Amino acid sequence: MNSKKIKFAMGIILVALLFTGCIGVDRGFRSIRDYVLDPANDQFEKEFEFSFGTVSITMAELVMNFADVDEPVDEMLSEISNVQVGIYKNNSDVRINPSIEEAKFLTNKMKNAGWDCIVRSVDKKEMTAVFVKAQDDELHRLFVISVNNDEVVLAEVLGNLHKVIEIAIREKGFNFANMH
Image (spheres, rainbow, N blue to C red):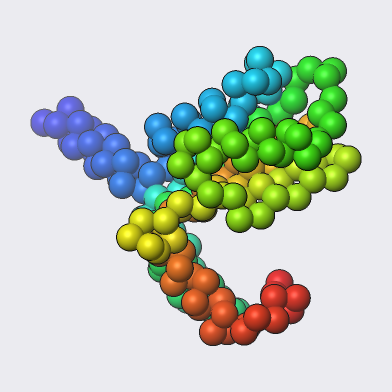
């Protein structure tokens, strides 16, 4: 009888972890990671990968309900279904000198994978690009790639992102300079 309770408790913990999405990034994220990092030939090592699912985001939303925040963060969080983040450390002595050619190469790779680039920034030390995917003419996926000498950072947000943008515009108008 004691082993049944232990098995039941372990089952509950496993189910809770599966529903929170906190076990790891999904196959789609890993394939983009591999797609982006493939030309680096093992130059980068995974330092951190994490996924926040609906349950984790809902818990964060509940915490935000009790926080004294003027921004509608809890309302925005309610429109997000999943967040995935990966940080990959540069393990080699090879320094990355981002260029517009590399940014174009990355943009073309992501375009071939079905993503549209909406913002791209390159300077001598860092390159960042933001990509989106729409479904039924509504924005539902956003992917950010940032590369510098020390690391590559990938982040993906899934949800009703058009609604998140509506909330931001409703609250701040187009005066984005005042956003914190």
